[in-house]
Length: 314
Image 1 (cartoon, rainbow, N blue to C red):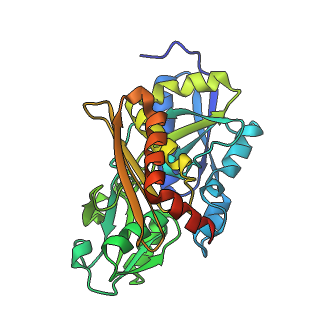
Image 2 (cartoon, rainbow, N blue to C red):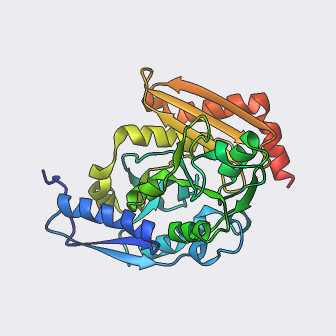
């Protein structure tokens, strides 16, 4: 059924040019083409600063906002109408003048263990080298597997797999969703459960960003929104935002629907994994952001505030 909203004749999607980002943009393009067959839907591929700087950890060069700034400029200048992002790449504070018009249904949110020689984390010998670009994953690994050597791993998904295959790492940890979307699920040796590695806020979810004043585009993207996933992601992002969530803060948050409406789990840790404060909270789905803020406050009262002071001190 075609929505009542009249689509414009041409819709341009801004996207990073990595294979996964283009898959995500093409997925949204195809959904929009189905909804609005009278429109021509195009993709504007772009390279961002986050894609260009690969020799330093993301936390050291300005954070995840480096992956979306150029796309936002294209929307401001009228070269693009909307942008498609992995929700975990979107800063917790949306830039002024932009909104999330839709939050997609979630793909598998788990972290994936990928290795040519080993079937899972427990098989890795002492001092095995594990690659990840995520402070969250690194902290969780160091907390549970202090005998492993954790090394930074930057680059797009194909680059990371090439480095693994070249023998630079014994194993790497990636988001399962990206591997599944690119038809690479066979590379997953095992999935890490949320108990082993709680996902990042928004992991496995796509977000559609538009300029806040573009009411027509907000309405156009609305049919792509998955209401329950949106509640979960808003709770996760509120938790992260309340704790200053960024690439400099090892933090996890994952919400799922349950009998109470919504079940949110979260933790914050020091980068070495030696200090970690975790908790969970249930509540009604419409109270999503309040649930996230309340859980963050509970963790602060139990030691998270001290961890944040340590992180701020460098």
